[in-house]
Length: 314
Image (tube, rainbow, N blue to C red; front, side, top):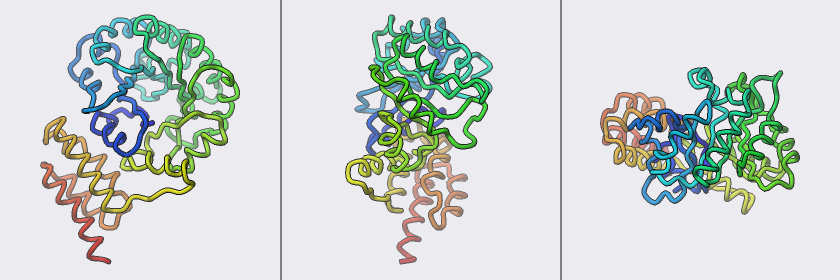
């Protein structure tokens, strides 16, 4: 699965991930309060790409109240499932009591799950961390509370809130969670430091998890979904060529232009395009050109130089 990533997993990126083999993807985290108030900007995060059959919406909220109030607006988008964010470590989210702050108040998380189950009838998942910090590891108890409230899927990011995205994810926690939830009717997904097909296969085969969410590992590398599937099926996988990376980056840019307009897309896509071409010979010069580009054509011409340079050097 493609993990929810604020500022990244819009419908253009979700479409690219789908085309590259992702079995499912999750929206950027959506403010339940913003949705309840009818914010156009919030609603735009819930738009499907053409042909997107499954829309998994991630909500963040400090309590059940804004979640219950946002349900009429939420259901207008006909979501397939709803994920509750209990893992975001960003201060502006945490200080409201949402995101990983809910690790301190599992009863509030459980009430959100119950409200969503009662009012929507949809599958509900919960994405959470090991705990608030190293002195308050509580992920097993938190998983129990989510499951008892009706969650049908649990995703563990194997770091504490205090760790943010630093250090190394504690992969042993996945095994503990799998053993703890054994025999229960719940899907278990892993998140954190999953960058390669080997990482995914190791976690599923050796740690008892049902699947993985690629987050940072998919930025500029949506090919990871195909590669992971190939590795699971055959024990090997094909690495994308420079041409494939460039073609996919250009396609991704074009989708963003179609959905958001050229001016917005060329600005917002810079972080994606930089990631697509990372480590390719000549990328630094092209990155400078992309940073200055104001049109789709300018971005495309800059990217194509990497293909031309490759052929020149052969």
